[in-house]
Image 1 (tube, rainbow, N blue to C red):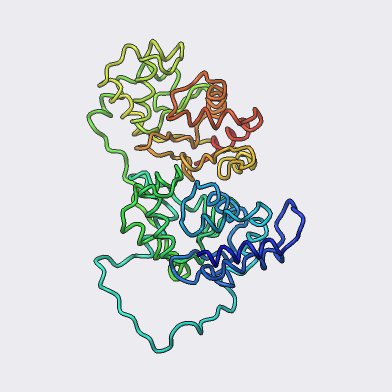
Image 2 (image 1 turned 180 degrees about the vertical axis):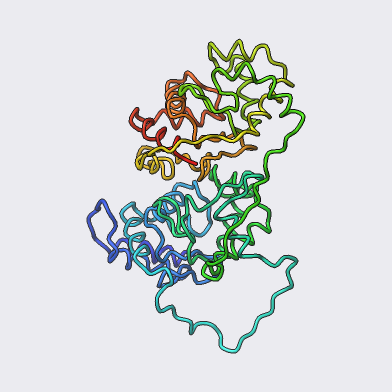
Length: 408
């Protein structure tokens, strides 16, 4: 390790270049020489435990190097390597790897021992790449696992620069990182949430999918979407919701733009809001007295009724600016992408307490973002929405509301 680190420092000190705003791939090629031992001279990991960097987004590589250097991402090998890098070094190295072909080009296969055979122990589970593809593309709403495709792109080719490409990555490395997110030895709120709800078999399936996405390219992803059951609570809730119809509509599709649609919303989320209106932790001059008269059973039944209804989504133009903010956030302004909590289709995550926002009334969405920004609404988990909204301009809110209202 001392030899590798010394070589890296000497290499960096021998290169005299001015700090620039963007990376220099030619300079990065020289600086990346010490990375080859683990990541290969062509950016293809020397073993399955080291990630491929060839063709990876330079923004993502820089982000991870900074995290290793600061200690936000912990790794006994990468931490000292990154510690010696300046921001320009990171930009150069990232630019070099980003310019390499995904498949590594003419990777040298001669280093493998010819004629050597290895045997592996039998495994209890045979991974299913088609199942991995379905989970990647569609997620599993019943377990609050969001689809990955919104952030990481079709077949793992991310179009959002701060999210890594997964295409042509070692499946073993993907499995390792998902397990790290699952057990929280690698910290990222959204990924900890998603991976935490995955089983080890799910992770194996996902890794198997990325071993060869082309092999299941023609397999259609499927998931079962059971209809909401008509329970006793739903039947009772229909009658009790009569007083709500003036603002929220008989079926939960509010005809008044400033009031929220409740149709198809998570029952747990509706119950939480009613409880907080009643307790006064969410303040509203109309909903406060309405909720005050409700028992816990009333809230369960009303929420169950609205949750079983189907939201009516109008044909709206949407917003490209809002879409970009929703899926990618804004790194420079430290605005977190909405997709991490509300999902690629805007359906939220029931068990995690994140509501459906797709198809919601535009005026209501904008009003709530402004309330969070001003601190007039503060019943969000860990001040997450207040923190995000505080960084949004009025124009940002307009565009986000337009996009979310158009989602289906």
